Image 1: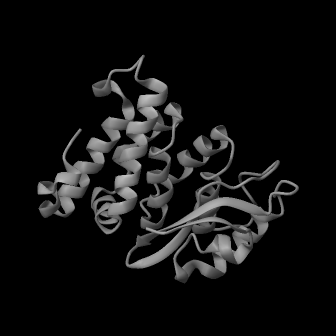
Image 2: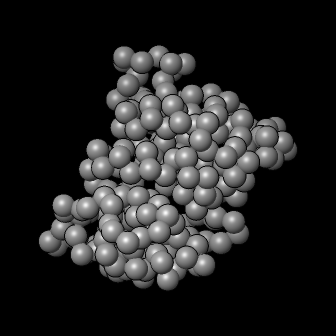
Length: 206
């Protein structure tokens, strides 16, 4: 897993968050989204790469938009999902939560990085939504994604531990915290897809 701290925000660069076969659509969607960039926010805050079906894609850590219409007209289903995937990286937690609801049951492998990334964030309402809709995620696709991205999976686990420790430890016992429940689900999906990983120390359960 590789990260880039700051980079010029362009439609072509943002479109790299999606597989190559969707680039024409992705550039069109991302170009439309960039019209709503906040003044002075042409740089995004970080970008990371993950493997999706043996292809490297680059996902923005955070993007900044103003008055974004969440449903552009005249876009097809895949373009709508791309739009919502980008909005899961919005600086507003409310908009990230709303966008998550549109993609979590899409059954598309390329939406998984955006869903898993949200698990490693601190907004417990978003974690609650993910946990409530886990049945909408294809377990085999999830297991394959986690197996192909061990560093990203481990980083997500570490972030869940860290945010629980900082924000929720005093009020929510470890065994009741929704973030750990999601990680258990991830663990089961990973081992179901790749049983040999279940014996590795790094994947021991919490």
